[in-house]
Image 1 (cartoon, rainbow, N blue to C red):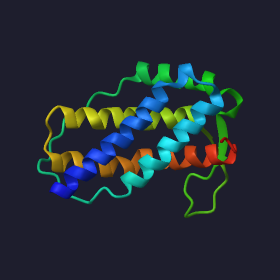
Image 2 (cartoon, rainbow, N blue to C red):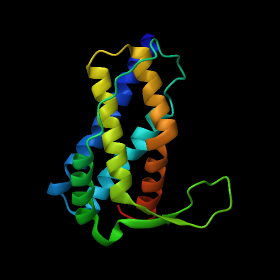
Image 3 (tube, rainbow, N blue to C red):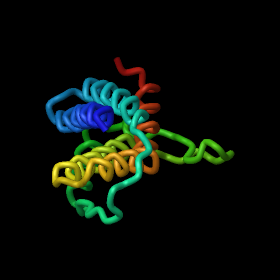
Length: 161
């Protein structure tokens, strides 16, 4: 479990770097903000890929309630910050031939942000480490990892340095 503790520390640090990058949005120019967010996403993705598949110790995890108004507030402020660079086209499921759908950086960043905030909160309230690791990996694989890849690809194509 000591390897997992070290990995959890690295993941927590990468998650906090992303959260801090998002929180810095009001104080930065759009291109600098997107470059910082892109950098933190790359580190977060790399670290999350290392999360091990573990069995949870318990089956009952109380998750933090999703704060719709806070999500709306962050999404709105990011949409204003990013402006015309916010929307991009993507394919939802790369394993099937599909028409492109519109994605938004503000939406993706908001989804990742609140998933990470909730995940870190679960760890803080003393949930067993195996449950925390299980949830972190599940959330990454099933939800926010897809948002991260869409947003990171869009940022990459913006050619922001």
